[in-house]
Image 1 (cartoon, helix red, strand yellow):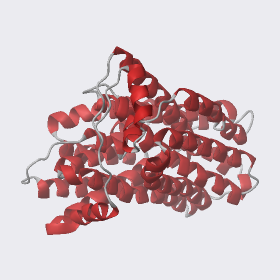
Image 2 (spheres, helix red, strand yellow):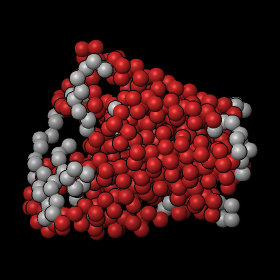
Image 3 (cartoon, one colour):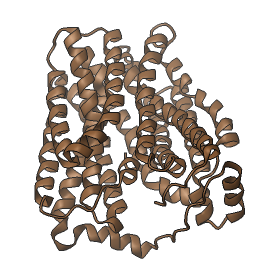
Image 4 (spheres, one colour):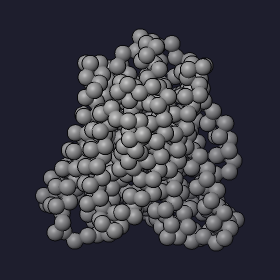
Length: 441
């Protein structure tokens, strides 16, 4: 990734514009991602479409499978059509897909809508991160990306309020119609969001790049050559040479468990809390508190990693997450449970990011992006498996074991990332790459 351009005061206004627009886009991304989990207790209680718990788990996995497809193809598509066009296309896709869910008359059509929404959701986030990295003020890239990531959890908070305000009085379809409203934001993106300077330079569109740079007082990034397919294949093989295969496998397994936790809990938290005896309103409030913890965790994790080291923080965070998730299966006083949910959100939503930080820290600079990207990609299979697992447990009448199963995923990630860190402790550090870490999120 090219370095961020130096910015004048006018360039600072451009950075604010880009970050603001991308923040809103990621907010809508979070709303659409979390809305299914927020309305799921109602769908199951009313037996909408005759929905069963195992079918509900499958539907949750459809969206995360779509996210896997979107994330893996986003870079290639963005290189062809530009980051701005891809962002607007992703917002359009997941908004229209929510409309399909809103008008669906059965599980099949609803599942199609969630799958298409997942493709848009998976493609948007890495593209938005690339955009803000391109325009972030010098030395503030990590801070800017951390700020952007808070939008995703803010969208999760918004999803809980949408469900609380609309589902009971109006119906679950109204919640998905709200998720269609980001279509109104698409013309704003087309009108005001500038194209990535790195993309313009890479494509030889020098006149456009220079005009934009002159308008806002931005220094153009240096042109970089694109890697060939052979170069990318060689970078991937490098992850398995010289005994590195075991280290790579440990990172992938830790990432699998981490994203299983993230998306499993995000999908099933309200339903599992209902199963523990909490009222629907309280169960949705837990979603708000969980995502508030996620915002705090995203802002705090980087500082902790800088001080104590990403591998240590990652292992500790996963262990604390496992303990917190397990405690959620115990019916405690509501106030105590709120604290546990908040702390679980703090650790869970940043533990996975610390896996990427660890991989980045222990990778050679010329292979770092490949190592982080593939760790993220393999982990996304866990994102598909997590919602399915929760549905299977509920369908088998073992909903009370859902939190225990997710806690075990946290324990496994603790072990995998801990062993990987110990094996590489004697290797020299290559220095972290926070942009690559955050881009994999």
